[in-house]
Amino acid sequence: MAKMGRPISDNPHKHVLSIRFTDDEYAELKKRAAKYNLTIAETVRKEIGLKATKKS
Image (cartoon, rainbow, N blue to C red):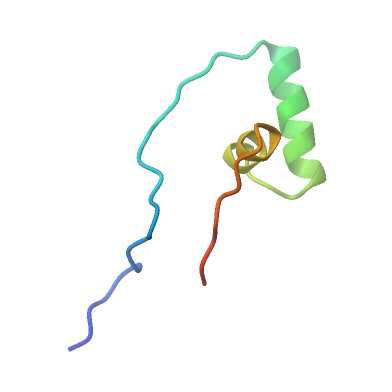
């Protein structure tokens, strides 16, 4: 029988970062994420110049 579940990523996101934002900063982050139809994490990565590679 074939193995079930999600395929293992070549470069998994294994580090968690906790950041505190003011209400205004968080609203701006959510606005930018919505503008590009991204998650907040993807938006942060984009803003700092990191590209998350996605494989289908």
